[in-house]
Amino acid sequence: MTRLAGAGMRSRRRQAPALAALALAGALALAGCSGDDEGGADPTGVDDAAGTAGPDGAQQTEGGPVAPPTAPSDIPVAAGDRSASGGTTITIDGDQAAFVLPSGNIACSVTAGGAVCQINDKNFTPSADHLSEANLAGCTAADADAMRLAAGRGAWTCVEEPIFGQASVTTGGWWVEQVDGTTLDQDGATLAVLPYGSSLSVGSTSCVSSEAGVSCTSSELGRSFTLARTTYNYG
Image 1: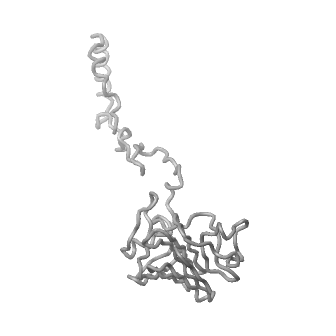
Image 2 (image 1 turned 120 degrees about the horizontal axis):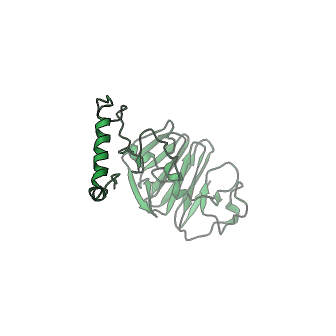
Image 3 (image 1 turned 90 degrees about the horizontal axis):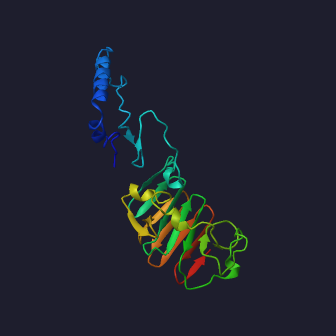
């Protein structure tokens, strides 16, 4: 709501003494003789009182300093050179893309160098022998909640940051708008969905979504895994 400067002052002006009113009239008469043909308007043509609306809807005056972003959400992520195409077979021309399955139980982040998929709810504990060689320190089989494509033994690991957040349409889920895809609202975020029967590829890495879970393969690494609520395998 814009507030008008000086509003509410008229009643006090009416109560001013007559002498003050005469003085004001004289001042105005002198101002009329100053030679300003625009009646005292700002010669720049800028209305400093009105200003312009900033990106958050707040009023800013023309020519004044613009406040820097105050939160990470205010800072746009650089898109870079990237694009997405396809219907059920989605090809990503970029460095990274992320998605969730329609159930919202599994989220994956895919790059040309590999993939990692995190599962929220599973009915098993992976074998300790299946922990990745590149596992995080202190991550046990009971803690492990993600599978990854990587060189070396094992596939299970723990992730420092939830992959589900990477699937947001404002981050790794950017591709969904370019293919007019499906989204899912979960935990206050809008996530990109890879529908059942669809695949997504980034370079030599490809993931397929199905009702039986998600399967990811890297032709470069010669590795693959399948992850579902009730089972998993890798090779």
